[in-house]
Amino acid sequence: MADKADSTPTTMTKTLASRLANIVPFHVMELQKMAAALEADGKSIIHLGIGEPDFTAPPQVIEAATVAMQNGHLQYTPALGILPLRQAISDHYRDVYGVEVGAERIVITAGASGALLLACAALVEKGSEVLMPDPCYPCNRHFVAAFEGRSKCVPCGPESRFQLTDNMVKNHWGPDTKGVLLASPSNPTGTSIPPSTLSSIINTVHSKNGFVIVDEIYGGLTYTNDSPKPFTALSLSSDIIIINSFSKYFHMTGWRLGYLIIPAALLPAIEKLSQNLFICPSVIAQHAALACFQPSTLCTYSARLAELATRRAFIIPALKSLGWEIPVEPDGAFYVYCDVSRWTADADSLTREILRDVGVVVVPGMDFGVWGAKKYVRVSYAQRMEKLGEAVERLRGFFEGRRPLRGEGLVKDDVRHEGMVVEE
Image: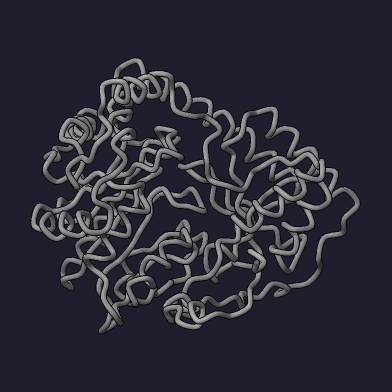
């Protein structure tokens, strides 16, 4: 019998689609595998890498799933999702964000990943360019590449809060550019796009007959708020696509449930794609998610947001005390994007050394693009306070006696990923 791990080329591997060359491994997952191996050998590991809350679904959500199963709600649903959940989301946007979104414009999906896949399947074609910031969530590039498009990644530094600006969109829009893919708040930086900037970007893209996709899966996880209500890009325009999920704010990561909010004109195309690609999202997860909007459950989420705010207030000064620079303090999500170039010319090597020596997982910037790839690391503070405190002390011990680098220009951003256009 052949060895299951045998990597010898076969007829099947020789016929793999060429588009796979445009999709690179997700380094945070590679670090997780390395951490798992160390844990298996008995090493204590603190995970500040993966973007997953340590909170799980509240009891009300689990109970709703149990009741759904007991009542026999186990068969296919409509491809667009069950109407009660679509209506509950619509009501939530009215009550929390102050915007009216008809339930007919809401499409329930198999996670935010399923939502992005449907959006890209509908809008991206061979040779299409999609503008996005560098750094950004790496899978965004890969969804575009999966449909033979190209991500045009525009370097975005601290001066723009690591986000695209309207001038950047105007300057980098080309003949093959079809739209923009944004995230607010962002992974990996935890920064949001100011509403005035986002409004200008939307107007510019629409003037060029392009599409705007805004990933708001960290919406609700914000810690500074200058307006009376939490913000959504839907307050600026209804002619955009919103990606959202039950994973982050609602703490249902493994349930794989998300949603799209789309212009009504796109509904036939998205429904056709959803029918063929997914049939329907998880029926159990859909019925469970109805409980997310109960008053008692919403109170639980508010308390958890306050806990995340406490962790944020601790981790930012703690990381600075290690000599890690935080050029832009995050206002959302649960990430801090740190400049560690004082200590290394290769953040990837540093993260591996930290993991091996003191058992703390942080993610190198190379996962998120080219700009700053070798000098930035992402830290997730979605861990309970005692773990965060212990991680900081381990890191402090790691850097004790370590001499900072000297000189200017020690770190060069020379990382490149296939399938992406990097604007210099």
